[in-house]
Amino acid sequence: MWYCKVTSHIGWLAVYHNLSTEGYLKNNLSDIELELIYNYTMKEEDANFVRPGSITVYAGYEADAERNILVDETLRWSDVDFYITPGNRGIAVRLLFRYIKGYRDPHGKLRFDPQRTFTFLPTKTTRYHLDLAFILTGLAFQRGLFGPEFPTIESLHLCKTFQLPKVDRVNAHPILLQSTKGDTLFETKAMKTAGLNARLKTTLLTLGFVQRFTMYSFRRTAIIETRQNEGTEEARELATHAPGTTSIYAYDNIGNSDKDITAVRLGEPGVAREEIRRLFNQALQVKADIESSFENGPVMVSGLRREMDEFVRSSCDTDEACQTVGKAYEAFIKELVIMKRGEDISKQQIRRAIDSLSIADEEKINLHTKLDELQRTNKAVRKEATKKFIKKFKETKIQEIVKSTTIAEVEARMGAKGHLGRRPREVQKHLIGLVNSLDKDDHGEDSSLVNEEVEEEALRDPREESEAWKDLPEKVVLESEEPDNETERSTLKDRLTHLAAFIKAGEGTFLLPENATLPTVPITTPGPSTVASRALESSNSQRVSNSPGTTFQCHLCFLDWTAPAEKKQKIYRNIELDRHLSTDYHSRLSILKRIAENEQRLQGSGKLACQICDDAQFATPFKLVDHMNKVHGYN
Image (cartoon, rainbow, N blue to C red):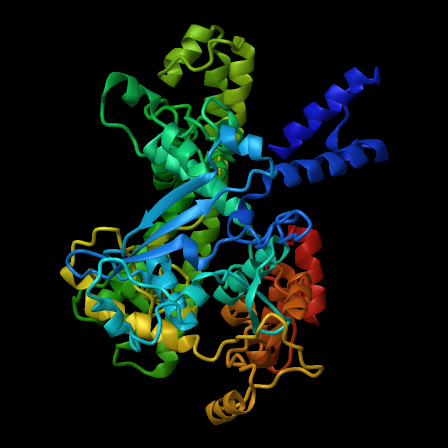
């Protein structure tokens, strides 16, 4: 969206100033274009990136005595009302947002009302971390908004009035407060917009989200989801866009691209939008964009692969060399059956049958050696036969395609009219390319001759998961807004328990008066008794945070089983974590190097083998990683 806006602005400037309108690639922009992009982007941000100003102090909206503006324009407790819900489900919240539109023009405000009220009822589930009413209630109780007549959170829910009373002094305070470099907050100073995204970043890092998010990206997501679920008008109301404007389309550029229009027009049950987005996922279209378009066409990739597998399998069964090694293998099994006195032996239990024989160990070793030779011979013969028959299948199939000289014949073979705009030769070239792109990595082995140990290992760990995932459930069930299970429904007792825990977690935080002098040394973390004594000694009572809000652990290191224990337990400051994540420590090559180092350490000595090249041997992990990067493109 930004690039389209900037490009159109550059084109307008070129026409207005009689400059060249020749198009440039994005990577060939000159200093002039880059300067225009930067300046225009800053102006667009100043004009549009002001929605966080509804909850914080935006630039130009501070208190200004010269203009007779006595308070900052930000979200305060006076904008929030708390209500006891019927049925005693909990406390509901009504929130008044004052949308800042980028100006303090009294005439402009007359044309458009920038205020909207939103109602947040208590959630019916136990997902309290997503319940704004839950969070605001706990935060207000911490700040002392409800007064001393409600000493506990339980007494607050037993209030006899529908609307909860508030203390006037705290009611005028901002909700989001400005902080020092630590976790100490100013009691009456509102957070500025410049610090909002920075604080959001540290919060997301604490929760393990390393992606870049901003408040504006959350707003955009909310607008898109509301428009898809509730309609354009509801989305416009949520965004507080002026009626008759087209601003909504600048936010939701997805539109109907993920909607089943056929079902909508015909009034039929359609495919969910999530399924359509998954269907057209870019990762699913890498091999052939028409693979899933037709089901019965023999020239489609999936149909070709099935046809080729059947051709190779039947050809190998009738091949003389394959029959010879197969008879030798069957003779070996019959010999074991005689030794087991007629007991049936499957191909997957041959080695177990050999170990269970009442014969000398030397004879067992000879039988295992003979079995290994038979398996190697069978594998080599079938691999060569598979290559030969794959080549023969491709040649035959290409000859059949070349004979299709008209587009009608090609379309008849495909079972659909999907290429009317192409010439026959182009279609033939496309189909020949599909034939040549068939995979052949899955062929060359007889699946019936898999070693017993390999099969048992595959059954024991079919998904090849790491040890850390062994105890995870097979299927994760997300809680819905209306859970069917009664035990998952939110109860008042459960809600009060979580509210008490939420309030207790923030007991050690803050508060500094606005005119307080900050200490010149870093604030330490005293015990509860020290905090109480300081509160008695100081007229300006301070409460210092007990939580290490400015230190983090790297969650990628914690989840990386190749990382050493000291890395998993290391504590970073915010800038140190940024520096750590900007390195290549978590790249694929670094992880491969650590795996090779661990393997060499377990071996004690010897060379490292490449898992792709059978004969490659390397003395150091560095040489192995360099080989994987240069030869196999592992990066």
